[in-house]
Length: 207
Image 1 (tube, rainbow, N blue to C red):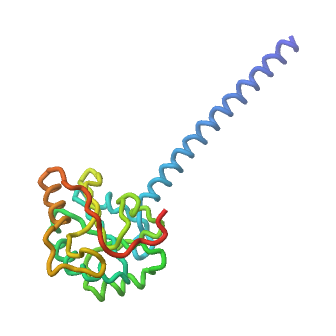
Image 2: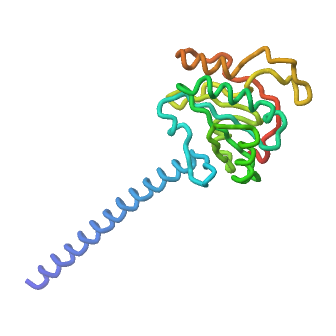
């Protein structure tokens, strides 16, 4: 009788240990999945000037999203400030514009000063890890990326063809690539071409 009870006790302990191991594995897997989800969410964001992570594609509430990559010290992108402001105001009802500063060395204070100096009314993000740079497939400032309401990249490249190269601006642009891309996506049409090479200052530390 004792032997029988001993075997039952041993079996019960083995079963209890097995259940404990399985439960621990399930909890651990769930925690890892949750952690991975949080990590992916954090990785898809830039940072506002207060240091908070912001995903501009999620924050757009169904609008077309235009990311405009600029630098405080790039003369070409600075000359585009009035054009960027005008396009943002023209499409304010249906497109959300964001300034994105990809330089790791530009502080929030320097960016605030830059916005004030050039009269920007567009929300600004820092992208020191180049998460938005990579998602937008950009290499230059100024360069833009247009995402449709489903968060699909539909255009990336120059704003227009004002500059033939860094030292050679035309009297006026003859091709309005960003304007055409926004109009096309708002009309539900395919953006063609979906890329046009930008002219300006290279984004440093690209990998």
